[in-house]
Every structure is written in structure tokens, then in C-alpha cells.
Length: 242
Image (tube, rainbow, N blue to C red):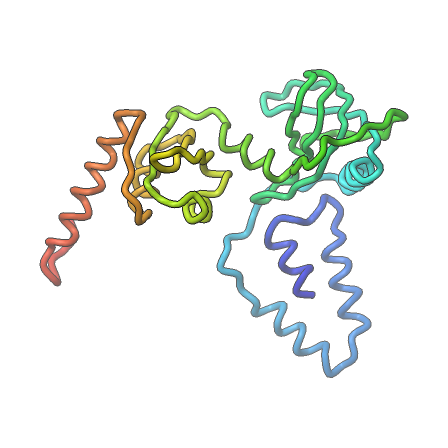
């Protein structure tokens, strides 16, 4: 029951209401001494994370992709892009990844002749093909997905040198936020951001010195944040915030 409740809360449910049906079946077969406590848990359980509202994939599509990944068989996809372009593609599926409320397929797209990432909820249909493939050695779908999401176009391209150990910095800056490259003088962080104020707050939360390479506007955001923190530190107890 915990697994089903958490899966629904995290947005892992598929388009078919399988989770709710499974919960109902479990409750029907539970012995009386367990039914009441578990029902109470279901009604009172809370999560610190927000409920994820994502478009659930079709169960049949998801299972077809998973089986094709496992068997090394090419699939035919009918796909709708984010700007509503409809295409038909042949894909060698390397892996299925669930990330931040969305399901993704990572694989080699024959139409574009390269690695691509597809939102599974945008796949109208998936049909197993006759061709087979062998995935590249040591290919990690999660690493590829998180790195590609970090490179998603945004208004600001950020480059900052952080003077700290890459192992510790990697724990604070996952690949979904930025790419990290070890250099002789520190870790070069590259990211694309919609707002520089959020980047300034992120950098201020780190315990290591850093140098802004670009953009220069990030320096203004850092100065504004510093002034805001200074004002808060100097405000007398009981004084209303400005």
C-alpha cells in the first residue's frame, strides 16, 4: 500500500487506473485486524514533496518500450513534439527513465541519426519492429537524460568556476541543474537558466569560493542578493521588513 500511494503521489501512475484498483483489491482481502490501521494510514499519510501533476503515459506504450529495451528490438513510434509536430520514427530504445514526474525514452533515433530523448506521454503508439540492435557498451540512460536536460535552451548561459572538490560539488549540483567539468583550478559549472536570481541564490548556498565567467548580469544578481542579506542581518530585532 505504501508503494502504491507513493507511486501515485510521485506521478508514476500510468494512464490506466491500475493503482487505485490494486489498492481496492488489497483492502478487500486484508484481514480485519489490518484493514482499519492501513485505511487510517492511507487517509492520514502525508508527503513532504509536492504532488507531481504530469501527463501519464499509456500503459501499453510503456510496457512495449520496456520490453523492446530488454530484448534489443527496434520500435516504431508515432511521436508529437512539444510544438505539436507529428512524426513517425524508428528508434533503438536504450532505456526508460522516470524523472521529476515524467517518463522518458532514451535511444538512437534513425530519423535524426543520433541519440534522442522522447517524452513517453507524447508517444501516441509504439510498435515492435523486426530489426534488432546492440546498445553501446556502458551507456547510462540516466546520465544521458540528466545531461541533456541541463543543456535545454534557456535565456541565460551560465559559466562559473567553483573552487572545491568535484565529488562534493556533484552532490550539491546534480546533472539536472548543471554540467560539471574538473579543471586544474576547480570545477567549471555550465548551466542554462531562466532566471539569474535563482542562480545567485544557488551559488550563495555553496561553501566554496567561485568566480563568474559569464554572464556579467549574474554579478548584478549576486550584488543584489548580498545587499538584501546585509540589510536583513543589520535589521534590529522587532523591526518590520522593508
